[in-house]
Length: 373
Image (spheres, rainbow, N blue to C red):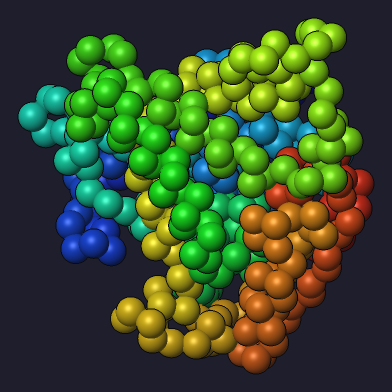
């Protein structure tokens, strides 16, 4: 379907005021690159804000400008789709710290040079704060719904908790209210792989044009394993060899799963900035919603985070997701119940692991369509 038929627009807003950050600093001239699909109604009451996951960006529907691949949620968003753009005006912004047009490490600082590692460490709430400023600029006071999967779900939770009157509903898919020690550990492996690459150069690699692609590829490979399920990997790859009948007794990619991971790693370096990966994963690791809202390390109960929200909530998990397992969503559901919020929760069966929210799971489509109404 043509972009004109979708009423699809990609543009960038420079925020009119400096953006305060949780770390105590602020950023001036913050750019927020975003995509919109559909038409905003006269009352500006039909807007849905979609928050993207770690390795995604604002191109939820449009073809990716670097890879040419379809938008990451094009199957779900569009005329007559589960997020129906005949009814809804859908917005997705590249997160603060990203590398697809929003201000991040590769953006130019006031001295005309890329921030690189001078970029301040950010949080999930900082990402959301930039998107709230975008909503303000668009004149949207309250969303029909805030929607997100994985890191996008963290943002949806932070939005509903910190700006409780800005959305009537929140849909959180395959996510968590805090990052576990295991998840932090996987991210640290990825960050160390990037920083151990000689081409990282302390983060100042932009002028050379040769970034730490090997380190970033390894980081992506390690993370990608967590997005899959053992069942799905076994069904897709098993122990099948790649383009050969016998083992080489060497260290080439003998197995199909090895070849797949190498491809995932190398292709990722074509579209993602290594420093952005460092900053975004650190923001995810810092995420603890109870602590965020209570305002103090280790303080606060999760139920308190939702005390001021009148939104409806829907939580979705997948039975094969071991990155953010069902227990994580159930914890959020219990907290919402304790706060008196209207909440529904469902665990869906799918063989794809954490990535299920991006793939063909008809049951998820039914949940989304039913919840959005």
